[in-house]
Amino acid sequence: MRSGLWARILVSMLLAADAASAAETLGLRPRLETGDAYALSLSVLTETEAFSKGVAGERYEETVRIVYAAAVTVLEVDDSGRPLRERHDRASLTFERPGESGSLFKESVTLEVERKEGLEVRLGGRRVEARIERLVSDVLEKQFEHTLEPAFLDPGRSVEVGESWLPDEHLAKRFLASRGIRVVDFAEGASARLVRDAENEGALVIDYEIPISRFELAKMPSNAMASNSEATLEGRVRLAAEPREGPVLTKTHLAFRLNGISRTTAQSLPWHLRSSVTVERSSQRSQDVALSELRPSP
Image (cartoon, rainbow, N blue to C red; front, side):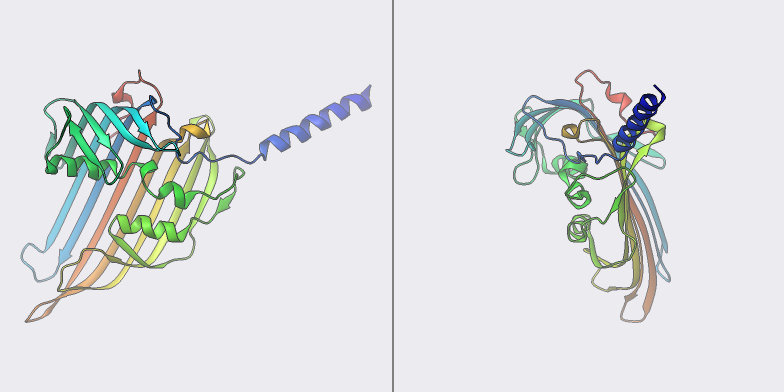
């Protein structure tokens, strides 16, 4: 009897150990179907500080937070399950900066978003004016699953909890270029790691960091020359229980600093720029979820 009992205990322990180390399939991009619906909230926080010695005004600081929310219904998808056309009900876009806040729309509206070649936005069947389309597109183009972020994080295989891997530097470079950062050299220490979030019922989470030792801004004044630079791209991706559903929460933080000089006819003036962009995305596959529940906290 005792030998049989110990055998059963040993088998249970082995099965438990095997389950604990089982490789996980990472659902980094949702596979959607026509008719799928989800509540979406996107927040983009930009913080900038610039200083130039000897120039009137000398210091410039700005903090802007833009929040977009909508109940999204998928109207058309491609063969890989990526949406080509969506309806955004109860859509709103608000902004906040120190001492000022406002809304792009007087009230929530229904938009139709097309993602075929570029991004087109329609209201009442007509394409919205260029200014509004540019503002909405600038936020929606940062939606995690519509960027290269899932691609450069994808290890191409199942991984175990606690395992680390290297993000794809080539794809990360293309992602950063879309944010106006031309990478010259990556620093050592880039990694992505799968962990369980104890504060959220053990949900699977990918934490990643990609340090950059030297970069150039895509848009620089003609008389400005950079002398040194560094940046960090980091983020956290909370995965859904079902890989097909894609991540439920994502946070991407890009921070960089740049020093240089501006050449004028009379002298060379030193300048300094520090900036960061934080993008937070929440989504839930439910038509009945309240949008207020998904808005990022201030």
